[in-house]
Image (cartoon, rainbow, N blue to C red):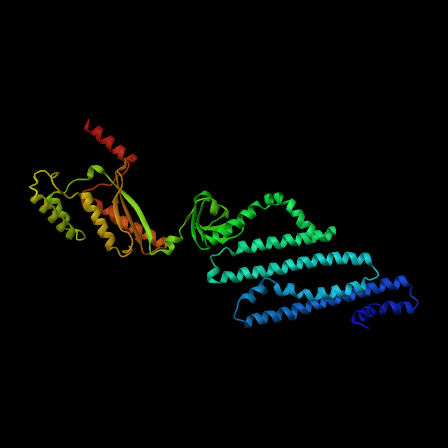
Length: 429
């Protein structure tokens, strides 16, 4: 006698006892079924308890002893719990057909529910494993800035799609292959339904392969009002934490279809660029007289430059017999040119400025607001708050230094200025 026959005899034991005691065969059959179901339910509940108590705890103890964190994440995503359900399901698979042998309709209902539950359990196990993989990869330095979540979501969509097909096959009694073939005819509809998902998946691959954006990058995307750090890249959206601690979500596909700023290059470089201008009144620019030159030589930063520069100018003017009774003749220094040199020297002496990167002080084309005198250099400290402090410190000094060179900054007249001029005009009258 094989084990299947032995189990079958065991489940029929109560029925035979009842029949031998003169109980109605139909009543004996249903009583036997009821008792068998109650016993089976008790066994499954007890087995579930043992799995939770011993198997899961044993797995958790094992993970605490290992060095890798992968198994720790398996526990957090309930992977042992789902795997623990395999044993009770195997018992149901082998025992229920025996118990319901004389009840084909009940067995058909059980078989339908059982197969759908197995499909769902497989999905849960796969989902748990994928979530574990995602959480584990995020702990690795080489994957922290990769859009791992996008790939996990794509795999989960495929898994759920196949699960849906298998469930549909169970409900209709059709072969799964027939549904897959039908998908070809319905591909246009599917493309329309999953358009954003497909575009997001393609964008995620391009973003990753071309290294366009990483998690942790500072990006500015004016179209969506985003200006901050990328905290998450998934299949449909990119999440950005703005500097005011608000969050902006951007469609993943827009990263390859629209233009945006990624500040990673600045963060990885040796310095952060300072590019700002002050506007000088054009009518305050003039040649420097001897008296004014002697006064400017008191400024220690440019005293050596003025001495050497003036010697070259005087030598040129003497050799070429230039009439210096008028300043415009020959070569001369201007207060704006000396001021440019002063700023350049000041930046070269400034401890916060990166000396191995560009340091440029230049004129831009004159405008209605005066002559833009632009400073272009790089600060060593790239942190935002320190960068702003350094920039403000430099331009505080530049603005305060302007009057020493007999220059004036352009400033649009305010209401008080207009009232003052009006009062002067009335007083003169």
